[in-house]
Length: 399
Image 1 (tube, one colour):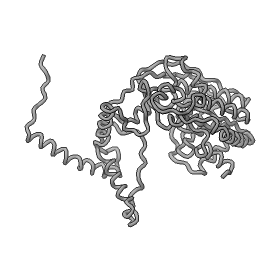
Image 2 (tube, helix red, strand yellow):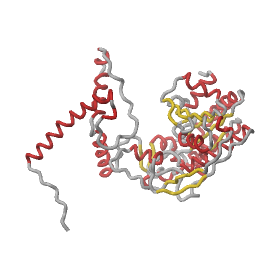
Image 3 (cartoon, rainbow, N blue to C red):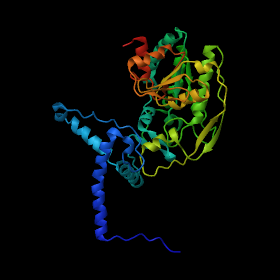
Image 4 (cartoon, rainbow, N blue to C red):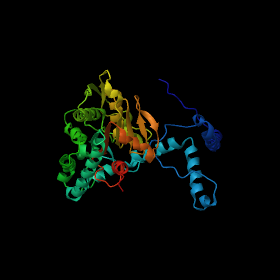
């Protein structure tokens, strides 16, 4: 069988190709800088774009101060770097080499556990520093404040639910605690959520414990409730949490009940979307998304009065798939989600982005919602600063 032979290049031809590339690179970069202002779709890009958020420097503006403090120089360097057509491909190649040769990730703060499980370092740090005695008084204080917030809503005839979402490290501790220092006693690691739930119930706060619910399903399926290459709960865990919320809404409202979700699922060996968010964040040339994830299909239903309920979901990154599930499949078509309160607004029957950034005045309609769901991840509370405490302070005029 004849082998495919690549054409050989003379030194002159190789030199000509190299020179052409070196001349084309600045020309293509200049074109991208020019096209960005009037037709971004005409920019030249080689390879898949990078994932992750990099805070850009302040934009260029004419002033002596901006030149003196280096602000304009940083702005120019940033714009030129972003305009290089091969930038994404070069970074992915570099990250792939670092990972294959040294086992290092190009994404800061991402750690690898057993069985290729990925996690963000902040979650592991929190889990391994849990101290129940140290946070007991803070948990009681926060529970008291949540009761104040709940009374604010119920006093206006509205429904309030505090939702606790799970941490991947708490779901798969065995994948991480033996590979990294973890000084916290096991009882403190396992006892944080149950302790806070008891405190919340003693304070009379309406709580849905999505964390314990999710962890209780470990071992009941051939997969865990978190994907190998993702930091958020999978579709099946979200479905169970959605039904717990619906049950609590029905308990409080005592009006026409919202029917629980019904679903089936299949097992896929290729992760997509949020099931591979950390894998994509690595920005390697050849990511491997081949691991087990459930794909949930919800049964169709006929919508009723619940479609007109004004629902506000305030929380972090765990609320998006949950909010979309409630919107599309539980008929809560007027649901709006507030990403970290001010970070962005999504909603509508198709759960679309409505606004990117919100001001203080633009979050005040939450006070008039029929149902308010306030989410915090188990890795967050108790914390003096965050979307939940900010909502408490803004609506109750606390300092």
